[in-house]
Amino acid sequence: MDIKACIFDLDGVIVDTAKYHYLAWSELAENLGFSFTEQQNEQLKGVSRVESLEILLKIGKLHFDEKTKIQLADKKNKRYVEFISQMTPDEILPGVIDFLDELKRHNIKTALGSASKNAIMILEKIDMLNYFDTVIDGTKVSKAKPDPEVFLKGAEALNIASENCIVFEDAYAGIDAAKNAGMKSVGIGSKANLPNADIVIGHFLDFGLSKLKDSFKDK
Image 1: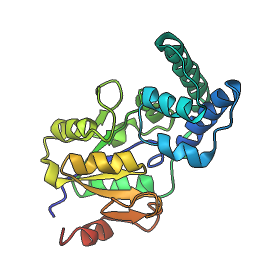
Image 2: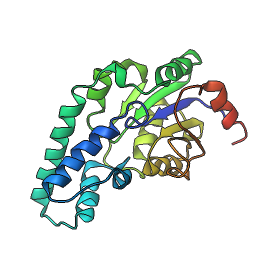
Image 3: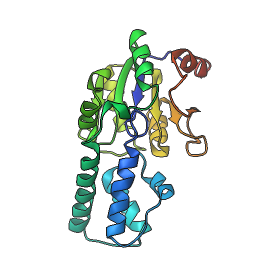
């Protein structure tokens, strides 16, 4: 495989904002009268805010009209924004900067592909906005993963064919979105949670371009 671009999800790949999503959803669930576990939160990774709320309400066996659901999603997002507004560069996950620097040195394009509408704000908080050649976030797409829209738009913005792109994702739906885009994928996490990923790594420490190329040499 001729690797020309790497497309990165944000939550759980570049920074661990997943924990803030969980805290905000957990607080909302508690206010609605039920508990929401970290294991259940796995179902929300890589999923849009609206769909996440639907999953949460299903877990709580609750039903609301559309107006109320919009208010609940907004309440969750405001709490989440309170959490992420305090973020600093210290929250960048280990090895990420070194890996991105290496890609840049070897002229491999980089994109951020995230469903988050707060992606730009987070990148500004952690001083990483300039690390990506393009940012495709929730303000630029209408379809949630596993729909490939976010990754296809990233490839288009970079002017790179899908077959030359590798996606880095920590979510099941994100890995499927990469496959649906005709791209190879690197799962960040465990093989148990990301069985469809082409390869899985626990983190970016000790993972560089040579290991990436070796992993996809015959793919």
